[in-house]
Image (cartoon, rainbow, N blue to C red; front, side, top):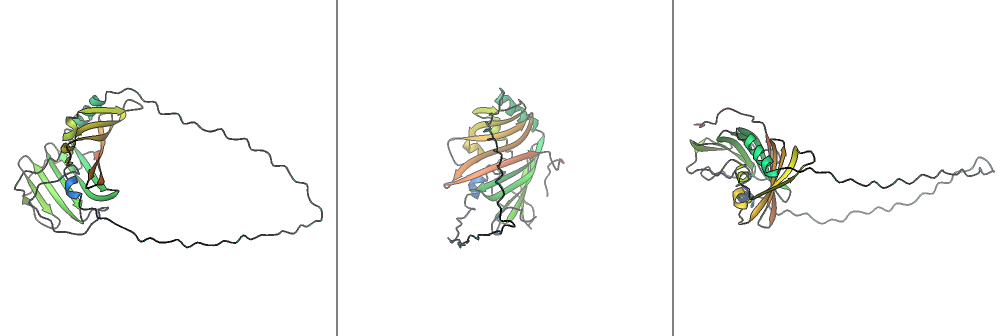
Length: 255
């Protein structure tokens, strides 16, 4: 296992005995320190002075041809954009339908970015009540196997080790199962953009207030979950994309 393409940072020492901060939800608090302040030297651009060159073309005849009138080009009328027409939807029902359809399992890829800089990537499969995943951050990786029977972790280049304490939740949909409010829009009644209001703490965000989560669905298919959080004055964007399970075999202990 190595560095994941797109993640930045320097290699560090990985400790195995800790709680899992997974799927960008509980991971937000731990990655806040990963993004350093970057700066650039001010520079002034060189200016180039361009001289106009006048070209004189000699006439082949002393007579001057009469000027030809250029036909007028009719003005193009301004285009007025027609706003998209939306149709009524039952947003809470659509959200519940998508979550229920994913209950059997799914593949997920989560990216956490701080002020536009990618600092963490988590990818894996949720199979039944178990999860396999790998987290890439700070130039290294951690892989997890999590099941009701126990949880195990292996650092990049290391060996599997059982966790002493139960990990944090590995299901990024738990917070969406009990929203306080759900709204949404759709142009065809099938594909929709939903907004679910949940407790920020359910997302692993250190805040007592609510958080709005944007959920993209296409009929009963859950496609994407996205939300923002402010950590130490910086904005973190968390995006999880869902797809078909890659490894559908049962999640079993690695040792």
